[in-house]
Length: 138
Image 1: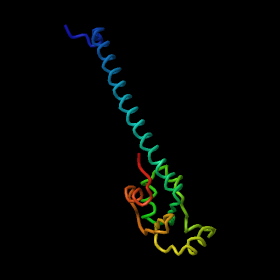
Image 2: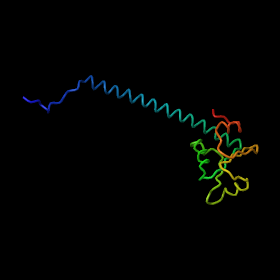
Image 3: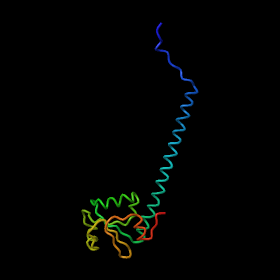
């Protein structure tokens, strides 16, 4: 009398329903966290968009070079909002903007030029940019 290996073990319906319910709860919790993360990110991006636009509206200009690691770090801080920063690329292959960089006597990168004529060479934090321009990171 051997054991019958072909006989299927039946799982109670309550166990199946419980597993499905647990899975649904887990999926809802994960979706809630993902939604909160996304909304938080969009809110933060909106604040940086506003800040970058304010810098441009206040006459602030960033001079940089595409191959400059400090310029790259400064751009990364703004993420997608960097498109709103008034940026002059001093290392283009067509030399289009290079003449402006020479004319403006920019030799170190990045260089931030402010409407009041003040200039800062090197990276600046958002807090420093806010203090120099009056723009806020609301």
